[in-house]
Image 1 (tube, one colour):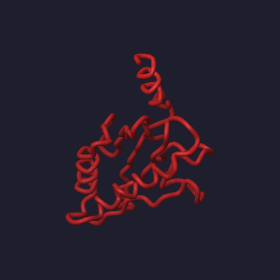
Image 2 (cartoon, helix red, strand yellow):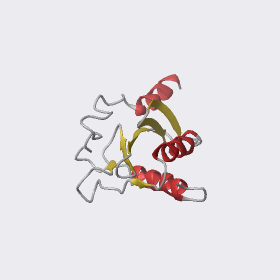
Image 3 (cartoon, one colour):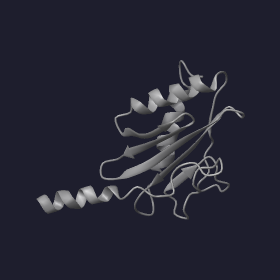
Length: 140
């Protein structure tokens, strides 16, 4: 049984070393379909950024509250305009990133699986769920 638990824990995978902001951009998605990014130019990986009106700091604070209140999310890194979270499914860990673009009033998003090839649309659906909460009642 202990070996089985160790095997399941192993599904989390190691945190990639390409996360974070480089030159104002989040890391590009790999060729596999288990990643979405608002900075991707292709249909397979592309997803719209989160948009807002008003104060950028208030919008980013709202996003942080939404993500922090999710049972599947843990905030790993928080900088003034950048947020990195681990998003858990039953056995796997995905990495979510959010980058505030004050000038264009958007929050760039990226969510990618650490392991495997396909995520069966989980990263996309999770970001869309966050978008729905962000744009919902009391939205920015």
